[in-house]
Image (cartoon, rainbow, N blue to C red; front, side, top):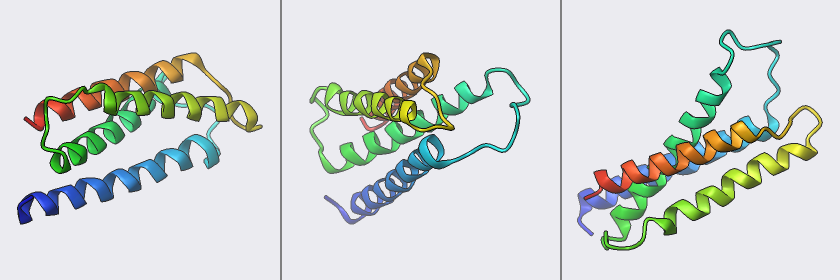
Length: 123
């Protein structure tokens, strides 16, 4: 791996760890003080963007380290789907949170789209 690729790998890896911590904080520990959002489904869009960004960053860092682009993209997508499910299931047990199937759908959609775009931009 060249020095330039090494720097990019650590950049994307560091960002993905920070983004992961942000997702965990927002999905589990954050308590909104607002009664409602200004737009009806803004939170669904936020879910999509959070998981899209996370999967994109991880996919980019993975392909900078592993140069074999012929592998199955499912090796990246499946762990994200499991992570999405776990985040929503954990919310069942948190008093100020709730499980929503549409949130889960947006989490998974963001993860899949982010991984696919990260895969194609890594070629």
